[in-house]
Length: 416
Image (tube, rainbow, N blue to C red):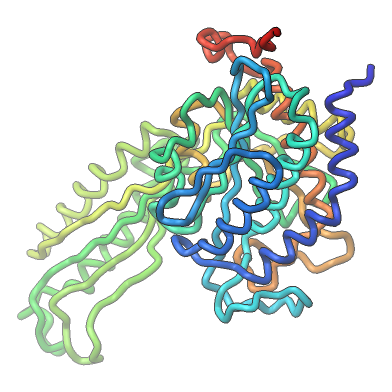
């Protein structure tokens, strides 16, 4: 049976595809790093205001919220759709005619595609405004690529006030364009950065017995953290410890006074996440005590794990199957141990992020954060369609637990 609202969304997005691609190219050519996305925020704000959205940009000039409420509707449900907007400190090597005009800065993670998909939602919702059964909120979030990211700042700005559900999308350069991946439950890992400084007593490399060698102690600690993680924590619920930097000394024949290790600790479960720091401290303290060294350990908490809501994941899967066909919609077997601060929104309302296939046929597949990353622009209208259709389904109550909507009206039209 035909659905007039969904038909109107389809027609609108079909007619706006080239505009959305042009927007993506404009954004790609003018990328901005985390906490500095002022031009991007202003450009998006202007377009959204022209579409009739009530736009609120953060006082810092980076990141915005945009609401669209049907005229004459007592506010029913509210669904939020989020995009990140920042770029990476990478020198672009794609050779595209719309390549980055800023040296050393590039949209290498697909945020330009995400922004264009969500602008497609804005176009579709604006064209169908008075037929919407509730309010749509767009979240254009700054600083996803750094830790702490911008999601918690957007939440503090009011992004999740009154929101019943939140949707998000992320490019997947391995999945062919025209396909998507969905997964209920754990979708990404939490990620906490740590800095460990081991302090010993410097000396001559010929007489290590007269020194307390922080390099030797640090190597033992690094080995222990790598080896013991799989013995202390249940391997079926993974914990990943990775060290990305080791800094100590400057001369080949001098034992330095101190060594610094920097790395990340990742997990899928909240229980494991809270157990990692005490375990690390016990392990490090034991080894330092053995060799007479001292230490300091600083933990910088990052994003928690994304836990996709089952009901909302079913909604995204259903609308994608309706749009693309069942063969083009895949259930992701295993979560990623990467991190994404979309998870902060899920601390306040149920939500779902899905993977959008961006691999063009017969083209090289460059991974995220590669200087050659070049997602297929054919994915943009697909992402916009799925987000728009899922948003409408949620506004109609699909995928939401009764407790999530019990205090809301059902979106009644105000009579004359």
